[in-house]
Length: 405
Figure 1: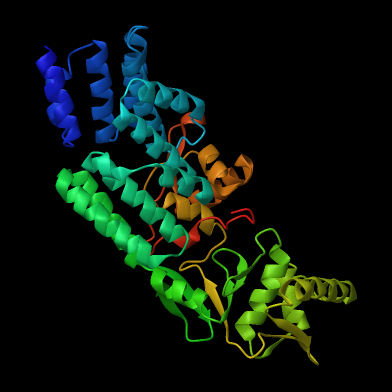
Figure 2 (figure 1 turned 90 degrees about the vertical axis):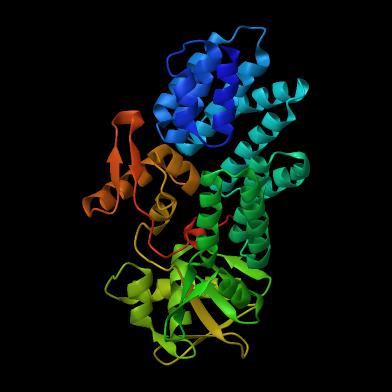
């Protein structure tokens, strides 16, 4: 019977869940339950997979700490695939420590990669980079080397570093070819397509045009003043002014940037910054106050001068451009996370976006009414999905980095 367990485990390692199920589908012992759970996860039935893995963890005796720890790691991976980002990470840490203490370095490294993936999904790039530096993929199996390089590429793309991302994806492709697992090859191909796809839209100066990640990186490294509507900041070389928490100020500087080198009328600025309200003297006073605040923030990289009819933005003789998301709409950040093709809960989206769950729920309900997202399940089991935006990478559509990042 143990030969069947070994054969099923080997089939799973090759990405053949049906071959594994043929050997253990009717068995109820702990090892078979664990393998069935992993097979169901590979087939996409994540709810059934989690149930089987929990049963397996309970079925292993108290002296089988390593086997139970492996079940915890497998369940954590399923939870991550289901975008259950609130899954208890302390359980994963405990399991990883048990595996390291018992010499199972491969599965311990796998647990580390799961933690790293969670940080990346939540936009915690500093933590993700720290964990990646601590891991040495040279001694790991080919499948984990693929995971390592994909995560390195993901971090590089979030940092807008196109060349390191390409190099990491090249190494990932080599490791995937060595592993001979079709799912891994497909994952690497999808990541490469994302890197090559348009990442942002240059909306000013006209005409509009799409830029890939390398184009965005080149623009940000130039001496151009870039008003970045993807991450809600103003950039000139290494100087960054983050306005993610100052939406009125960002709206004003974007309007000025789109018109530069011309000026913008006061009434137009009031309409854009203050929700289309009819301009009266109180709005003009508020506009002067907000422009004054904006002047102070950007004084080292740009100037805002008053004109007869409004205000004009200049950058000490340098060019001013405005970058926007490839597809802009009210709930673009929610759509960006959903466009990875996975099913998300509203609580996981709230964690990733740094917003309240109720705010995310309202956005999802609005998108559902116009047919852009759909859900399945009810109550806490409800998950939201949408198809990916065709031809666009979501790298720059994700939430704006906080000042500490």
